[in-house]
Image (cartoon, helix red, strand yellow):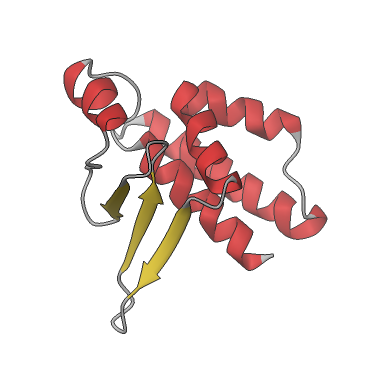
Length: 119
């Protein structure tokens, strides 16, 4: 049986992208849905994007990675090909407490950065 939550998350991202392309805004109901699906780290990830602390890096082959400037000024690199982020929040929330979607911060930042860059 295929996991249900990743399917819900992908549909939510499609809805956000469509709405953002049509209105250049993300309505509160979709932001609330993000928080419901990804938990509190969704808000933290969106805050990092809003602060322009996320940079998308692309290679000539089309691979992407994201560099995120953490609150303490430390730079973290997140690769789309793996389910890991070197930041302390990921280590505590996902690896230690085993909460939330495995890559919720990475997915939220990735998708939000994609939408913002399309505007």
